[in-house]
Image (cartoon, rainbow, N blue to C red; front, side):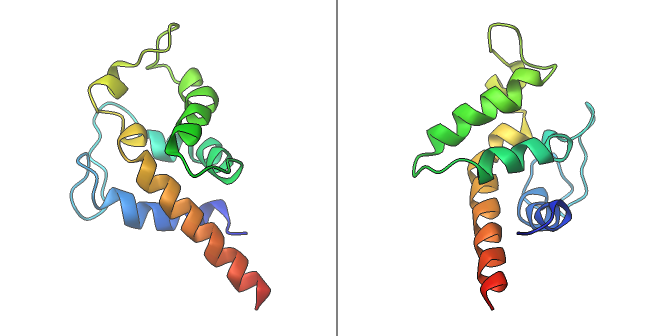
Length: 114
């Protein structure tokens, strides 16, 4: 199984270069704190690697429960200004995050079998 650092490397390469909060080179330009992807990486990896579904909805429900519910940006009623205004990088790129983590995990499994 890939390490957290390996997952971060592939996520950074796939997400940060495309992120609207970045410089196009992977450098983060978020001015309001830290990137939710980096801050919550262990929880995100747990959500993705422990969810088995063909629907992104199941992954998102688990993300809301495991990560968003502990985020200071989300209100008690479950609403989130950053998510509602598409300013949360984690929410904005979550489908791609799931894809990258799943592909990385599959490559890790294939390498273990060699």
